[in-house]
Length: 266
Ligand SMILES: Cc1cc2nc3c(=O)[nH]c(=O)nc-3n(C[C@H](O)[C@H](O)[C@H](O)COP(=O)(O)OP(=O)(O)OC[C@H]3O[C@@H](n4cnc5c(N)ncnc54)[C@H](O)[C@@H]3O)c2cc1C
Image (cartoon, rainbow, N blue to C red; front, side):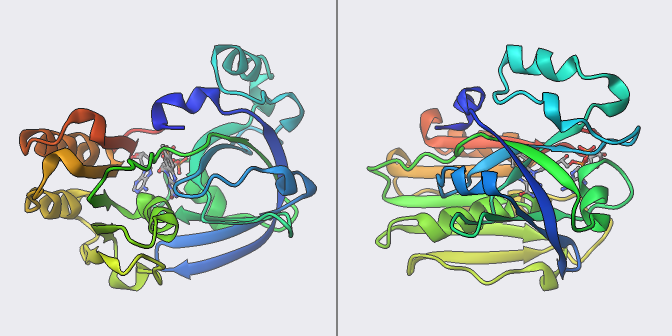
């Protein structure tokens, strides 16, 4: 299921926070657990979901959440009284342990703005959430001779999941921008895929610019057999796609999504 098919994803799963761990300076890992998670299908790669979290106005009523996020589901969501309506955001499965009914999520910590990042930093065991499975955004192109994966820290869980699940014979390059060298993580990957970490090391730099600069230095040897995946801050995704199209990569071979946008709430 590609990004464009997300609304077809179905299934509401409730769970509670059981662990919070500050993994690195800008990433907090939360572990969720619950019987529902034993039923969550494992799609692998960059499997993602919509997560319903407590808002700022009062306790979240998770009982009325839809199990699908099409128009009907969204209207159902809106019928929950405003004060108890959970907020929803999009996140990636970092690790899913179905037998244990456990799911890890890596949240980027990005200051005092927004809901999800702030919530994750302070989430306590016992807090309830709900999520809707959205499948994967990444599509494995069977004829790809090279995989290019580019993203910022919000895309790190997605790119690490893709690297973990690519076929062993895959070849490629992953460019992963992170705020700080200490935010890098161990990588499980096919031998033929190189990973380049790009630490910004500058709190005033705009996220995504370094990854975009790296992407612009990339010229595909064989554009018609490239599989490209560019996600993260909006400008990285759209400008990255523009560069690849100009380099001759057919549009249907470029998966790209703005995961978030500077100065704009989801
Ligand atoms: C399919 C998909 C999967 C995703 N997976 C993950 C994931 O696994 N981990 C993850 O951390 N994010 C992930 N994201 C991105 C995440 O949904 C957004 O960053 C979201 O905006 C965070 O919500 P918030 O409530 O913290 O901030 P919002 O309320 O949406 O935004 C508030 C402010 O914070 C800024 N902001 C938002 N995100 C960031 C950021 N990452 N860095 C700096 N400033 C930011 C906005 O520009 C805005 O000014 C994913 C997005 C998509 C579409």
